[in-house]
Image 1: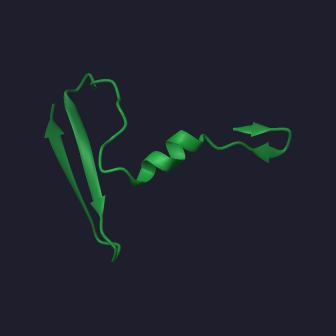
Image 2: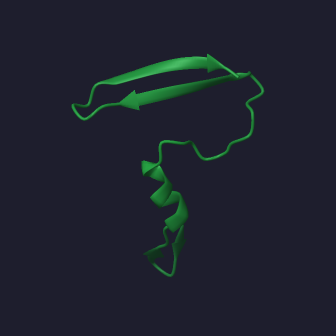
Length: 51
């Protein structure tokens, strides 16, 4: 968000990036979620799961 020319950061959301558990989110209407994992060398894998 921008306010008065400065950017405000949601500190709680920023800190949660390093958690091993996802932040809560509503169940998607499609019944699917995608999980992407990126390791230290930059390789990535994505998998779609039914929920």
